[in-house]
Amino acid sequence: MKRTIRFRALDVTGELKDYQATEITDQRGGRYMIVEQGAMAFLSSKDIRGKTCKVQRYLVSVAGFKNTLPTMAKVARAMNMPSSSIARAYKELMANVIVVKDEDAYILNPLIYWKGTQKQREVTIKRLQEQGVKL
Image (tube, rainbow, N blue to C red; front, side, top):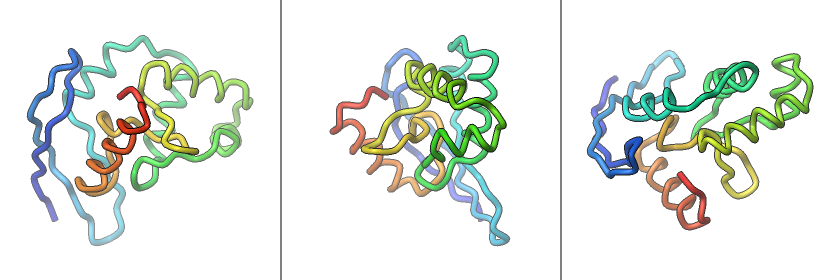
C-alpha cells in the first residue's frame, strides 16, 4: 500500500521547505525507509569517505523503526572491523549530523532518513530539538 506524506523540513541551506514522500507498506514484511531528495543533496555535500562511508551505508541498511541503530560493538562485529574504527566513523557521522544522539541511543538523523510513521517522525524531531540536538 502506498500513501503520500507531505511534511516540512530544513533543506541544505537551512531554509524550511515543503516536501512530499511516499510511505510504502509491504504486506509481506518488506523493509522500507523514506529518504527525501533534499536530504540526498545534503549528504552529497559532505566529504565522507572510506570506512566512514561504509559504516554509514551499513547503518542505513540495519536501522530499526524510529531510526534506532545497533550498538557500536554490534556494528564492529557485523562489519568485522575494529571497535576503534567504528567509534571514529560514528564521531565523523555525528559531526556531519548524519547520526545523532537521542537520549541514551544513537539514531539516524530523522530529517535525512526515516523508518516509521510520519507522526513518530514528528515526535522524534520535536524531542531532539527539545534536547538541544542539532539537526
